[in-house]
Image (cartoon, rainbow, N blue to C red):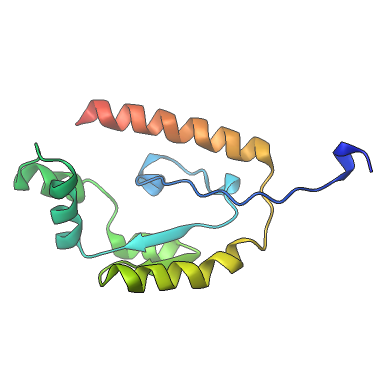
Length: 127
């Protein structure tokens, strides 16, 4: 067969923390996986990753985002990240085969990657 007649399935994951806050790019996505924890866990994890964040700054960052309950409602799949890492890993392993059910054209993946880079640059300059 010619190269253009073959279909190649690529599964790609893109981490976009501000997916819902930035703009509606859902048409470019096959499915959305929301990984959630409590607001308190989110604040503590944010301070752990960013030594320069005070508790108030971390809380402001959490408060600036759409509440996790709304994100959970909008997601196609939900991963509970409030407990042990092994439990989160188990949920991810169970979900992966379901994510391979669709094919996303490579052009959409490239556009989404460029958009994610843009959002990251803008967000990093805000804080």
